[in-house]
Amino acid sequence: MAQPGRYHHGDLHAALLREAAILLREQGVEGLSLRRLAERAGVSRTAPYHHFEDKNALLCALAEDGFRRLDRLLEEAAFQADDPEPGLRRFVRGYLRFASDDPEQYELMFGRTLWKTGRPTESLTRVAHGCFRRYVDKLQADGIGAGTDALRVAQASWATLHGLCRLLLDGIYLDRQDMEAVSDQAIALMLAAVRPAERTP
Amino acid sequence: MAQPGRYHHGDLHAALLREAAILLREQGVEGLSLRRLAERAGVSRTAPYHHFEDKNALLCALAEDGFRRLDRLLEEAAFQADDPEPGLRRFVRGYLRFASDDPEQYELMFGRTLWKTGRPTESLTRVAHGCFRRYVDKLQADGIGAGTDALRVAQASWATLHGLCRLLLDGIYLDRQDMEAVSDQAIALMLAAVRPAERTP
DNA sequence: GCTGCAATCTGGACGCCGTCAAGATAGGGT
DNA sequence: ACCCTATCTTGACGGCGTCCAGATTGCAGC
Image 1 (tube, chains in turn green, purple, orange, brown):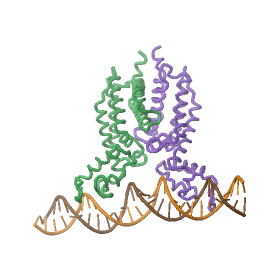
Image 2 (cartoon, rainbow over the protein chains, first blue to last red):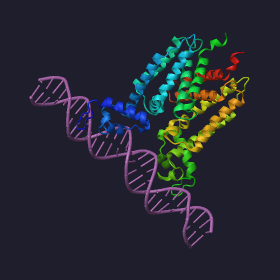
Image 3 (tube, rainbow over the protein chains, first blue to last red):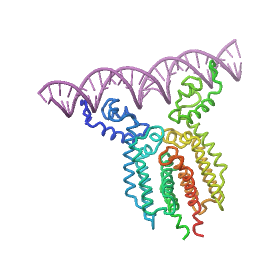
Image 4 (cartoon, chains in turn purple, cyan, blue, yellow):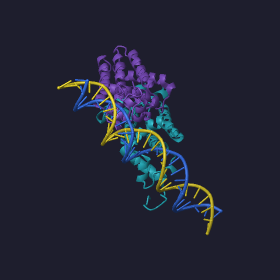
């Protein structure tokens, strides 16, 4: 596809998303312009508008893919009430790996570009919230934080994870070297939040 | 100042920062353009370049002001080893209020605009790190988390706070209503991290 | 197989943006 | 009084997202 000489591209929609993911990974949102994208796809600068309402819509689609991958990660997670540590550890590691594998994608998923400045698609909102919902449910189903409000535990622990990722990815107060130690610390923190009952045996 | 008719402004440097802070608060970084800023100050579009090297430099100065205010907040914080909760609670509330009072300023201070996309000024870096340093020292001086590595505790707890702010300000998984409850949860989390020794009395 | 319609793609234009370059203006020290 | 330099101006360039009018194509129905 994208034969030089063909007037109709064939599958521009998919090609745009594919190329956008590459560009995002390599250059970040700032380097992702519709014009450049179109050029890469071998198409004129306004062609993308026939497949996405505007740039915001394309970015939402991109972020949605990310949330779907994250959801798969969540699906695999399993915590056991009697010994939540191994499961929790696996999940935390997985989450941190997810974020640091493709920092720009993570940034797009959770950054202000979409949620504050832009207008998140209804579809994006659904997937993103579904992701979090799954996390809450999982905690609850596995009997984690039984004595407390599962929603609050979920919010606080996700925030911890998220905060770590942001500080790490933006390189403010953390760098790669701290990764291991900080992830351990986070696990400890979350464990403490998750088993308040065990403190009075 | 900015008399219509005066060729020299008088104190453009300060006027730019002042106007920029307003524009930032009202419209966010995205609404803050040098051209608009210049217009507001009653000056031509390239005049700002005689006071700031480029947009990045101006934003760094703006963020620096924020960190200085945050540092003052930190200065007032006090945790007591024998009963850290009240101090911690005050600090957490203060931090959350700081972030939600001027979300755009907070975003600028900790966002990728400066730290990832832009080039943080040496001066900005110094102030920002000084801020964090003060937090670590304070924890240590007040004997918080005695048994553990103060740096790690600081990183993890700051990350928790930061994550909460981001999720809240960007409106992803939290909204204003959750504020109170989540801040309590965060306090509990940090308390747990801070007194591991007390768990084996 | 032909026709007409809708989907797709094109180039031009507009108004933003950050920034560079060259020239105008004015205030302060000699 | 004079000049130096800080300050400010206009003009220009390239890049951006997006609207518009027109060109091209694939396909459904005849």
